[in-house]
Length: 165
Image (cartoon, rainbow, N blue to C red):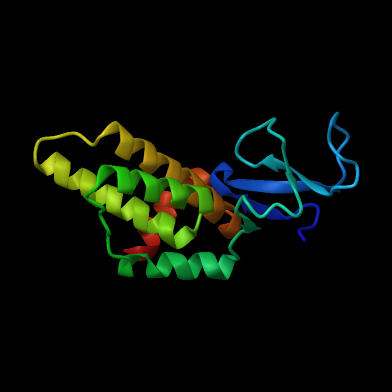
């Protein structure tokens, strides 16, 4: 069980902070069930309620600073894994965003970056779907790494580039 004040990753919602744990006062909601009341760190004014016993949505602690640094150090070893079938790629990328697994997000970002470079070299633009997935993956990953490393989210990309260079 998470504690008040802890940072967690809540699937594709990204980094949230636990504001309270307990029943919620909302019409039609059982007073016997425990809920996490969370706010999204990078989206002001948002409140999320999820049952403590909810197994259908990915909810996990954020990486520690050590784990974040280890992940970044290992980025250069992550090989791009492009999925040629559009529907299968969309399904897999949607699942990666839903689970918010950092290593998988890194692989997704690297794969999409390589795909964009290939398309640009061939005189084509990146597709809007690729761009949407790329930015969603960056948003989730950089948000978590920013909190774990104690730096601003918009500095994470530069931090990664400096670290792997």
